[in-house]
Amino acid sequence: MLEVSVWRGSGEEGAYESYQVPARENQTVLDVVSWIQQSVDPSLTYRYACRVGMCGSCAMMVNGQPRWTCRTHVKRVLERGGLRVGPLRNLPVIKDLAADMDPFFDKWVKAGGVHPPSRTRYQPIQPVRPDDPGRVEANKAIECINCSVCYAACDTVTGNPDYLGPAALQRAWTLFNDAKVQDRQAILDGVSGAGGCHNCHSQGSCTRFCPNELDPLSAIAGLKRASARSFLKQRRQEC
Image 1 (cartoon, rainbow, N blue to C red):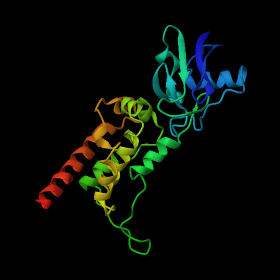
Image 2 (image 1 turned 45 degrees about the vertical axis):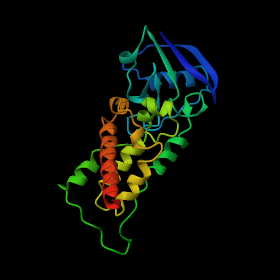
Image 3 (image 1 turned 30 degrees about the vertical axis):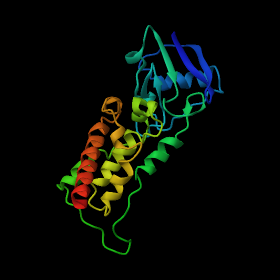
Image 4 (image 1 turned 60 degrees about the horizontal axis):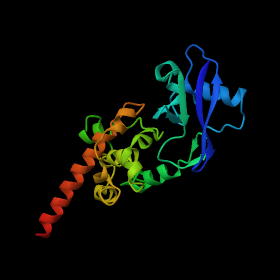
């Protein structure tokens, strides 16, 4: 049997409750949570959809680390024969293991996550060469599915609720390098102010824990360099 502690509650009120779960071969953390909900307490609230690492909706804290529970095998994360499962860190809790994703997506939009087109629908599509340096850089983050694992892993978000977070800034870097985006300065303006890229402490937890092996830390570093160059250029023009 497995000793599994699961967070139960809503908002800031709640506590961990312990359950005895049968141990099985090739068992994932999501399997464990589902067994508790189906066999012990149907009121347990959590999210999942695809179960194969495509949607990211099953992300939770497992023994203090953010993970996709559908891709996390129990045997690899057991600590003293047990598991501790909670909602994603740095986000409000709706109920039990379901975190409120609104703050995460609000920051994603605030950082310029929506693509600003440079042409209308009536104009021909702008061609972009596959070997274009900007496209190569932008494609590095194409597999981001907004699971918020990097956001939950980020200590800067914990200490500064206004910080936009790794996923939002990585998206801004992607658009900054997109040849179809016309106003790159607007992107830099959106991510270089309070709560922007320069708040990053470069600890690298975002890159370490990304299930898709993306590198938000490098994207944030790119934004820092680009915004610094833009600032110096503006100062020279003023002088």
